[in-house]
Amino acid sequence: MKNKKFFLTDLLYIFFISLSLNIFFFSTAKLEAKAFEIENIDISQPFELNFNKNDVLDKGFEMAFSKLISLIVNSKNQKKIEKTQINEIKGMIETFSIKEEKFIDETYYVNLGVSFNKKKIFNYLEKNNIFPSVPIKKNFLLIPIIIDMRKKDLLIFNNNKFFDEWNKNFNETHLIQYILPTEDLEDLNLIKQKFDNIEKYDFKDITNKYNLKDSIILLIFKNEKEVRALSRITLNNTTILENQSYPDINLEDNEGINTIINNLKILYEDYWKNFNEINTSIKLPISVKINNLDNSKLSKFEIAINDIDLIYDFNISKFDKDFTYYQIIFNSSPDVFLKIMKGKNYEFDTQNRIWFLK
Image (cartoon, rainbow, N blue to C red; front, side, top):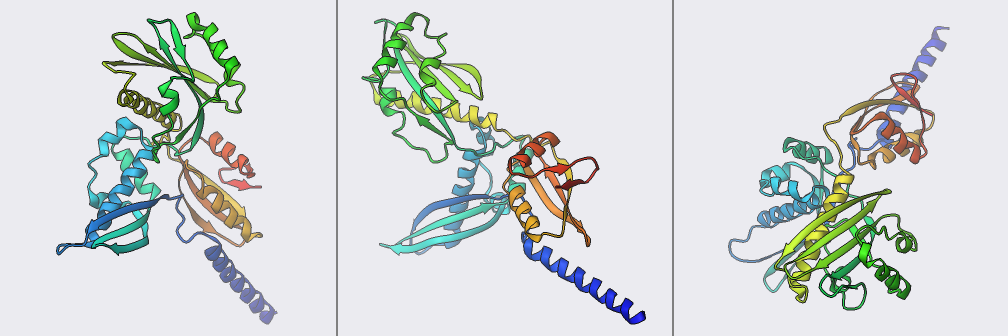
């Protein structure tokens, strides 16, 4: 009996060692929520007597940080941290890689990829009273219409420089992609019929033709004193109106047109970022346990939660012979967490303090 007991103890010991190794290998090396990856940072500098490669890399880190902030912070708050010191930036970098480097005509060229620690970025922004946004790409149907108040006429396709110029200048840090309508005579006639009541017209007869739920109707009112831009923004079945005035703008001049376009694109980007804002002051602790019988289930679960932007942090808090326990810090409510996870085909028994993954 003693020998048998020793044998069982040995088996139990071996089981725990095996379990520990399995959890180690199947779990992420560093259990941290998804990092921010910034790729294709190109820097060049003349290869002169005082050349210092570290200075070039620091310049690349600053460029990468600026690009990240442009993606996740609205324009007003970007100004608060535009003078962030390089040592602070480097303290938020998790890893970086040199994708390519070369010397051509006594000039050093390098292409960098930089990975920022999401938790440190969020902490830094919170310290500066800034809430970040989830950097999600978005398609909007955009219908720009010039309304000449003096001539009582409107331009939709032909001779409409907003229509012609809108998508010419690409900004890689902008999240919104604009889909312009096709030139349709029926649409043109319909809009002209609504001239006297165009500010109240909902344009659904036109927007419903496209497979896009969200749209921006841009009405450019042109008169002798100023240009007024009325934006009718429809997002998630909610419509808001935004009014901007531009005095001393000449719509016959491409520079004036592009000034308005760039200003409006920033407005729309900010609206989209505010819609996807993360309240990082909410740090909801969620405890989850998962049965150890299926190691791949643990790995897949970690991959799933690592890809959720609202997860601030997570780690394995403990494990035993039956379960692995996770501690998750979530930047929203329990209902939002459960909804997101259900969308990823994960459901939980939430009757107890520690939720069980079914």
